[in-house]
Length: 111
Image (cartoon, rainbow, N blue to C red; front, side, top):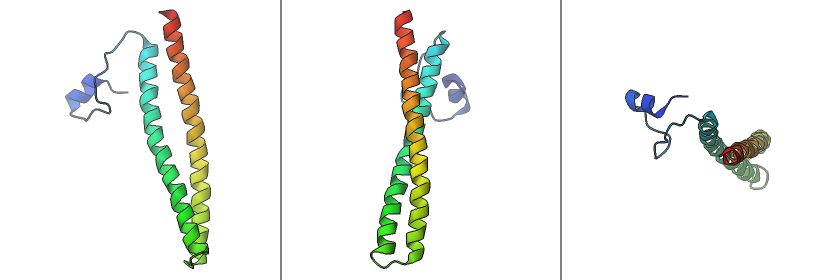
């Protein structure tokens, strides 16, 4: 993972609003990195929720409103795929949060 200094030198945009102070404790740096990763996963989770909603609307239009059987079948396929992705992301985010909380608890108990 690139540091803030490397990002500033390369002209890349920062992924967060404030600079984090680098610490000697690798557990703190790992908790920060995992928090950023969890935030990125939450964006994908919102997209998967939107895909489920689109599948429901497409299925309703295809099967009920006379949009055609092809639209209904596409809706079912889209719904199954996005539901699977949603479940995987949700479980991963929950486990990631527990992991970050465990790291923070370990830091508090050692201080």
